[in-house]
Length: 146
Image (cartoon, rainbow, N blue to C red; front, side, top):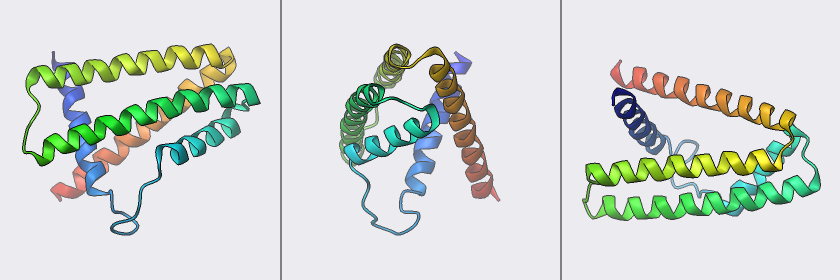
């Protein structure tokens, strides 16, 4: 139970800090489209994991679908927030459960597409990314207090 509460608190904290820095580098700066973000992500993965053309196509399709789902979810949450509606405990649980289900499905698909060596390197990259986000969140939290 504690872990669930901690995870929820971290997610909401990261979301809040992401909103705080959304305009960093210029207020009103346009965000990249899901297609543009996917294209850049696939190129980055190609450089890091040495993906072949078939792997690039499969991963691009997978990441684009995931990006569009995330975009739709964000729009829904934003609309509810603007209406002043906060999610209930059950809705928060359902959202977290759905997010984790999506993450599990994504890992399974990536495991099918990548070789074992590539997948191992991909997992390592993901862990490093999570650590970087956590460090940044702690730094922001510390900055806000002081």
